Image 1 (cartoon, helix red, strand yellow):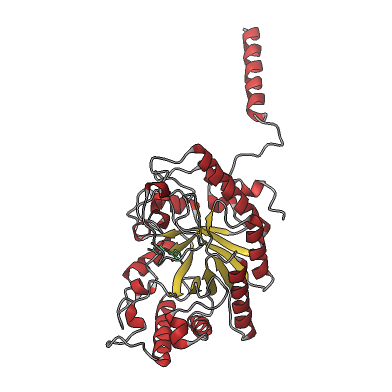
Image 2 (cartoon, protein in one colour):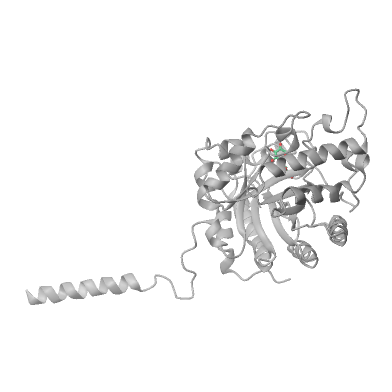
Length: 385
Ligand code: XIL
């Protein structure tokens, strides 16, 4: 009996030792955090752009991911001018109200996208009933009314606004948009001033794509400097981050963030995705007006993503997050442009009907190898040029 008892005790203590001793050497990483927001807590927020079926909680696959993983949200479309202000004197606040309520219910940092853009803005804004361009004063009055009304409605609730989106061209000059042509270059400072007046506490951003290319980046640096010299408040520059496996280089990403840190503004990665599909055009652009003809060659992974590409995507995400970690003191948030691969705008742009794989969750809502690579970013050394 005693022998049996002591044998049992020995067994129990052996089991206890086994339970306590690490299965892997002590230098190995512990269990990874299970969510993106936890992994980067104390560094930067992590977010996603939401479509309407997400913030109205129709999307039973996407919503649990959003609630579990993210602590900041951006509306993919519903706060763009054509949606929130489709006709003269007519605002459509139903969807934006629901978006903001979703963010508040879930304790998230709520972003507004976007006040001034040359895309997804109705023709009535720029043209009168006879088809002629409106005057500078008319367009300024319309812009002011729009900003006061939209920012004012969500004052204290939407915490940061993309005030001006994509105002700079690839060569660094101001884009020849109707805003520039009708008002002149001061439309940008007016927009920031009016946004500031409508909500002095809100963060105010200049947001753009392909900022990593030097000529464009230099133009944006000059633009921000000019606003600062005039005493206009700019909180952060948003780097959209519509990336590819081979663009931008890590050195380009690093020096671009560094260029804005040197100006004393914060940096946000605002629309992150990584396109693994073949280029449809030569230019490195996220110009939403671009479109190219579909072809089988442009849609090579319709039946599934080969493991080699899956791994390349994970590595690429790991590398980019290494750069973000280096600049974690300046980076306020990293926002993905969509939740799952099935939601991504890259299934329809610039070629319709492709099967794209740019995000961290697959079409079934399962985390991809890229998710693990991102979550482990805090355990790896940050990028060193
Ligand atoms: C895209 C949306 O994802 C699409 O649903 C819409 O059809 C077009 O716009 N830069 C931006 C975003 O600032 O607003 C764009 O979003 C993607 C490029």
